Image (cartoon, rainbow, N blue to C red; front, side, top):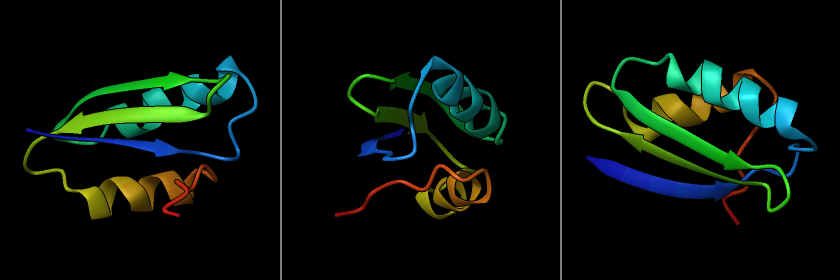
Length: 69
């Protein structure tokens, strides 16, 4: 299992976090998605067949691109 925490600048409210949690959480292999609208941090846990590339692609597609800086 892998875990990654990223900052998502577009997160502005709990609704944004809920969207990320439901959309990314629906990907096969994603175990959990936990976000905080105040810190704009999203923590994702996954295992195969999910990988970071597919998770990141989904986040970009729903307009919540993670900040990799």
